[in-house]
Image 1 (cartoon, one colour):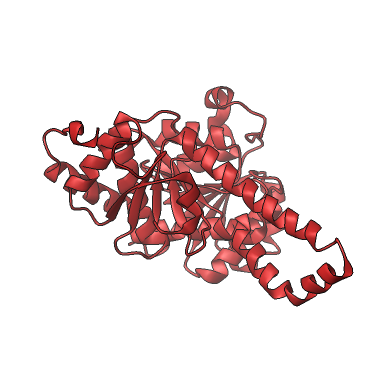
Image 2 (cartoon, rainbow, N blue to C red):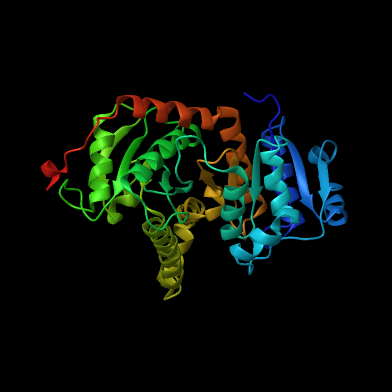
Length: 350
């Protein structure tokens, strides 16, 4: 375990730039007093904000760069010129061992592309996967992949399941997370060959998880599983649909309470419950998607995250560093390959 974790922060990423990033770091330092930070971006702007952040400012390292990755930049463009940007330098800090993790609220596509090229995947991992927390009727669930890989084979899905379970053990505190593959039905005969093969292999090997088979899209919000595994295409649609549904529900409630004096009275009587609902659905409460499977911890914050949201993303990075999630993933993968069957018979699932 790292005695004092160092987090590299892309201070220029996100909608609010250094102001929100440094205020978020200050709040995170209050929660985790041993945290150290390296800030990358415009030094003058960063120093001005650090003057208002006494917990962080005294020990902070600032690395100046005049360039940054813009939200409109295409990953192909950034790859050619991005190493000297605030995002690129933060990634290089992790690669060089100057920091154990990085957090950026910048361009998602650019962050994934640059991090993958600089850090490469861990041994035994073919592709990284973007994982995040999704609110449910019970506790949060981990969902991956959320967009890093449009198409996945069975081996990718198995690796995602192992990584997602390790992530859930750290962020959810569940010793044996319940894991399921997102599918069009719960029956074994449904789904693609890749899904059926991944399911049969996951059932065949004893891992630090409880494999629950398949889960349908309408069951995601029930919270009956801790980890939901899918390809990046389906995962991104599921995430955006869930976020849109949350906005729809809160919007419909807001309109409904305006229709008459009785509904306004109902609003006054139910304000506490509505505040709890809003807090549960608030993206800032679940901020911090992680690009799992790289040789280094990469956390993506929402571009419009609040100070609390950025602090939560930093907290995710802190927890993964302290728990040594990379070792957990490596150990679980080694265990899987040591005990996996030589061949899989899919005929029983047809």
